[in-house]
Image (cartoon, rainbow, N blue to C red; front, side, top):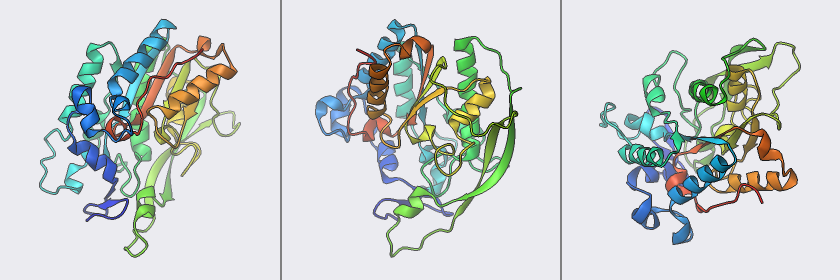
Length: 304
């Protein structure tokens, strides 16, 4: 059942129409990009050149890129929108072909699909929120653990959690998809989810990003959820800080994680020309649907 900005699946699950569109378009790069992309100009449709250019710019500065596209919710829970779907099938085969293409060009891509599929029915709950576009608190923890494994290899640091304490907590949210339902449709109630709060053992309050950190977390609202909204101590930055023992820097946006956030990085380097000299790893995390649904994929300089 389709609504203006949200699509109702079964068992109370809601989905974003643009995410379902992304899963339906097939190959979205190369010669197919301009045919399927939501980009306003054909020359801004293909994500591949922009990602490769960003990777090369960072590489020239001695910085490693880890690309972390968040898999579509409907690719992890396809049976919640298409009941007859065999959950053993790959719901997004073209996406994994794109990752293979990026890897063949030297880009390190972390595909979260396997870990999410493995834990999709955990006792901690689902890995995505039912009524929101974002991962759940548990999905965020799983993502952070996998990202931290990769970052430790790159930074050559040992796992350390001595400085932080964690505590699971149940919270209630009104999901963004629930709010997108038309006023005349039945609204789901608030959704209860588990989040893992991270605190400094010294008790000095909410974890803050560190502009001098060798790690930069760059991305869309997946870098902000449970840290900037819905909760304050349970987001990706908090979980990475707990896993790594050091806080990353953060450049996150509630808008597009495709081009807008790289413009924000460029502006940061204009203000501080030495900013990138402190960085060794950039984790670029955003919704995978951006590959076809972003209105702009363009090359952006990382600094002057």
